[in-house]
Image (tube, rainbow, N blue to C red):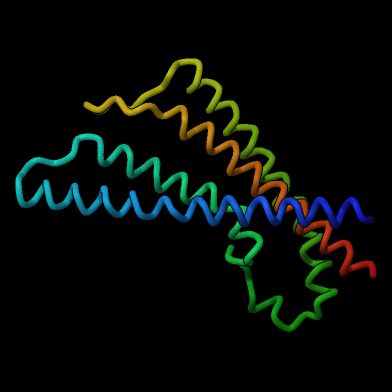
Length: 165
């Protein structure tokens, strides 16, 4: 099962890299918020595009960090139930619940791709004064959901190894 180990390692490395680089989005997000607040309350001249860009930056930060969060075990779980289980039993329980995760993320990927395609075709933009395009963000959503999906597959492969060895 060398191919499975190589696949798992590659997906982990990809999600760690994406998570690391995505974290740098926090800096411009903070700068834009601070600048907008200062300009709005001190000079009564808000940045017209700040809200639209902040929504997209926060969305990118959230969706692109999903795979990384899955690696580090940062998603919500019911530790009260699983804390008393052995590693093997946790893996078996995770395998039982994995189809729900994979189907849910699969539907999310499908719907996100459909929405992104429609957005791209229409060159969708916010209806605000700035007319900031939305379709690049929706395309990045596909990437983020896909990264989460393949990280979920990696988790299943690892759980199979623990459960049956």
